[in-house]
Length: 181
Image 1 (cartoon, rainbow, N blue to C red):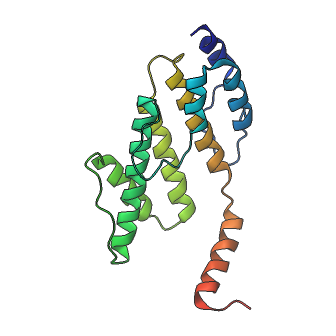
Image 2 (cartoon, rainbow, N blue to C red; image 1 turned 90 degrees about the vertical axis):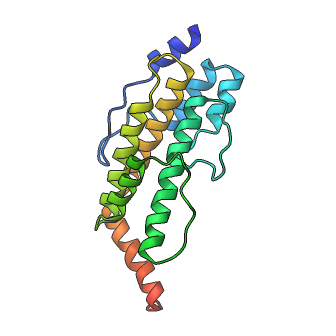
Image 3 (cartoon, one colour; image 1 turned 45 degrees about the horizontal axis):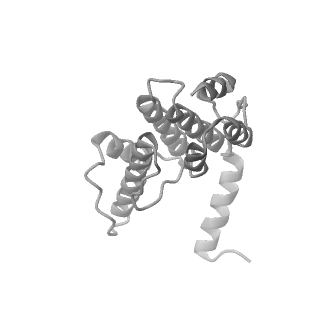
């Protein structure tokens, strides 16, 4: 446990970073730092840390990560269901753990005109969800995992580029219409 105190004290604060801000730490450095201070079981769990939970519910070995994965899985299923309904297609039934706030967030995102605005909204929703789930003990291994998720969410939003998105959208749209050469 003493190692975790030292680890957490070395992790810089990550506030909600927008697409233009810089992060004080990279994911590679975070994982390297964790590898020096966490026990083997926690490191094994850390290696599975991802923004994309497995489609089927599986235990990670961390109650916190299992809850995070369940909420993220529900959000993705709600998004898929709402998009499918808009296209008048069938989709999977939402699990009972899918709460009204998750469904509302998905509806709000799907209803936005701009895919970039929808992704920014969903990223903010995920960060707020993560904050609401964060362990009270900031020196716990689950707090270290929450930090990793926050870092990955902040890195992900920085990948979005409005101009590149327009070019990509136009290319896909033209391919669908068969207007490419």
